[in-house]
Image (cartoon, rainbow, N blue to C red):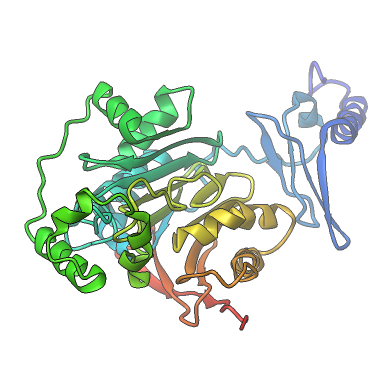
Length: 390
């Protein structure tokens, strides 16, 4: 360590370089992709050094002040403030970006944006107005992950609350646990001061009765409450066209901190208690400041089987570009066996703020994004990596 960077400059400069080399040799995590090497020393707080070859070294040593190398403090607000989302996030993306403009964190922005979608009644894939399970009542799931700390909170199969994303954030910030479901999640929500919602969807009883009648041949939905073999009906009840939906948000704030959030009412007409990928860490969403973030919507069973969101971030860690990593994450799901229903869309963002979306279907899909410099959000077409099996 250099006690006085201004004294004995030549000697201290060499000492600083020696300590840098020693630090890298002892604690660096090195991954080789072709002939390139990316080195990261995991320290916090730290600094980012951008060498001429665009490799990145992260370190935290005052001795490096004497090396003559320019250090970039990640806490300086020189990062693009951006929010991206699945298309249905359009109703909340402006509020999320406004939060970033006000100096709020990426975590704040995610919660603020998703809360808007959760009470947007026309959306049947999110919130208490979403399609219910096979017994006729909605069960909600949500996840939030802080890419700076990799803290995470998730809830599943929650009934009677408007904002599962806020409950998930409380799990992340208040509990030693990271995932609560069902009665436990609802008890925790009550303890955190959340009030039970009084909302009753005026249209859903008729929609539900019609679905049960047409898909299951049952005139009185009450019969389902007493059947002892509900599982035999679940495959007939689920609608492949309603396996998707969900709202995904990814935000990067002025400090370069990244957050991902997901909220959903799940697969329409699902078996009670079913969890898709949305609340499952690494499947529905994953964020890591060092590399980026990803989130999924669609047939969650596929994303769970591959850990799709984490895979995309891992591929970026290995040195793939954002597009390469996203495409590879989609291919992983396409390599699963033929027991598949529907497809999956991934939205992704790298540490530089670049963003994109891709699907496993023939349709390219799209996403919406907005930066702090934009007056209105824009929709961008994604890529398609379709299933090529039989």
